[in-house]
Length: 113
Length: 111
Image: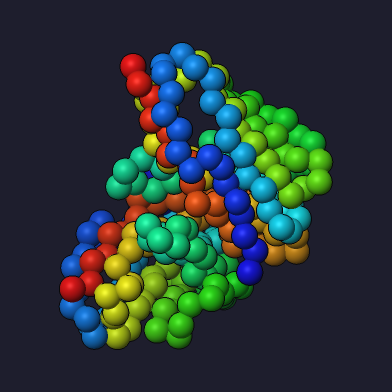
């Protein structure tokens, strides 16, 4: 089946630093989504990307849909302690249901105040 | 607008038993999908329902089943539980081809 390679697996940064994480796929996706999950909770949607090359921001978060449609990245600027959590990328393949998502393994972000 | 509601939040079952989990989607959303989350396998797609019809199914054994009611609420059932079924089960709802919004999940522990 499809595989999403998400990196890095974990990051430990100082408050105020910028963060970057990415996902690559062996297949083309129509949609890329980025979620954040806190312990014991469900994933919360951060950013949705629908077009190749699209660059979208949500506050301090910026994400891009790769031109090849096989990759995406998420940047977090000026990190704060509440950014701590696990970040997941998810892709929806062409021709499929929007709700059949393939997820990366996640990036665990720790922010040191 | 209320979010996706999953019940119960926590569940402990014994091997061999069966379990039913419930999901109420966001009002107006007709699509409900289910995912299993484990430390080893991550988030894996189980199945998706739209207007009471299963549209997609993931690579899980037949012990995993689901259904959707006319009010879009959905249930998933796992029969003959195994220790490996212990996981966080997540439900997501969506409207047409928009993003999927997740509930808080049901933590199932099989002992």
